[in-house]
Image (cartoon, rainbow, N blue to C red; front, side, top):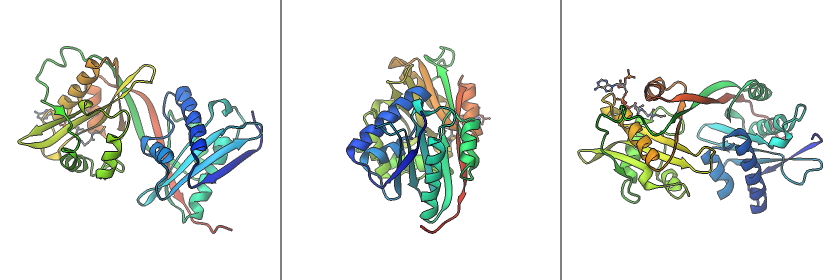
Length: 312
Ligand SMILES: CC(C)(COP(=O)(O)OP(=O)(O)OC[C@H]1O[C@@H](n2cnc3c(N)ncnc32)[C@H](O)[C@@H]1OP(=O)(O)O)[C@@H](O)C(=O)NCCC(=O)NCCS
């Protein structure tokens, strides 16, 4: 399955192209056990990209459908790249991935260059080699951790912090405050605004019951937001975002809220708990290991600076 690769650049994709790319993403998600685009990037694809969106669609001789897709996003001060190759076209010698990356690098260079993040899942030497072709080297790593559910009775023996469901239309501002305080160091999670939160509330998977908030003296001081991946095999119950206000950490709340979230997922019938955590977030990683999570796989970012070039 080789042949000349043609890459089309798009600032906006037609609905039929979005449909074809969604099929490609779905096939890759099954093959890789992981959605190839993160949620932000996928919403950009299906809702029409915000400013700085670039879709790169790869076609190969003899195939009417796209054989690969890369998405370039201009963020605050840096660029993001995500890319995926159709599982049937990942044979040795096939250059779809390398050509998509090269084109993404060119697009960024033409638009002034800058700092670049490329996220890869279940990363290994092949992703490292591909990233190196556009001058990127390993940067942040994310652990995907899992643990079986339900939680053992001994762990649930102590009282869990009281939680209630998030109330849409009421809790947004107070939640944003604690989220942004707790994650002020975090490149993606620390700068959420109302629009980002509302976008998540509008998602099909959103369930206020699975978004547990904990109050003290009328203030939200911690939360455990869960997300069910029902179409995954096995279905996964994710601790999607969890945080405790910096003023009340190290009192057992983080552990308690993790258990409260896992308990909620177990009651919904989930048998596997899952979460993503930055490999350098040692406090959180230790907490999760203590609660019985183990690393399932590593997602690796490759980073670097792409210099500007003229359009030639
Ligand atoms: C990670 C996070 C949720 C942990 O919350 P927390 O409330 O501090 O967690 P806990 O109190 O349950 O446990 C953390 C530590 O406090 C210790 N601790 C628990 N109860 C304690 C007590 N009564 N006295 C002293 N220490 C205590 C725990 O043993 C643990 O020890 P360690 O720091 O040596 O590992 C919190 O730090 C946070 O919100 N961080 C920013 C957001 C974030 O990183 N979220 C996770 C993303 S995946």
